[in-house]
Image (cartoon, rainbow, N blue to C red; front, side, top):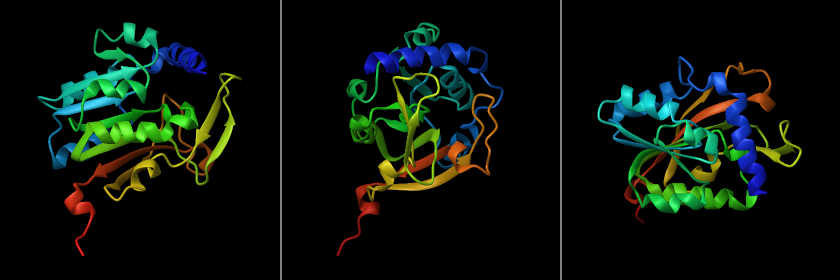
Length: 213
């Protein structure tokens, strides 16, 4: 299974080769909004590809340091050391606890085996600080569905509201949602089956999330 996932990560990188550095990042408005409330100092992206978004983040937000993880060795080789090779959620143990202002889930959870989805949410919760955000780029579907993956007969695509993995916990609140275009594909707002969303979920401190009796 994981061999198939890694093979697709490499294939995804190759087939989108000319689209890896778009003029406008689909997450830019979301990140700008977060930065306007509290300057970004440490950002981590899972599914970072060759690190193009991380480089834009460091250029755009003065003093910010950006780090990345990807499961495509081709993408990591092209990242000039900015992206580390590894697979979430297991590799998140390398990054300590509560250290990032923003953790980006960069368009990969739709292929993550379902047995590891809650493990991913737990790992992300461990590395994002109170007051920080999880930014999610993924499919959104009004009801959870699974469909065969167009690019590989060995994999399945799961479409659902990924932010719900976090907002089921009272410490997390959905604070921003935008339907976005992705890698040159226009978002068909009339067809929920094709929605791609940029979500921002804020992690509250326990004092804010839970009221005393």
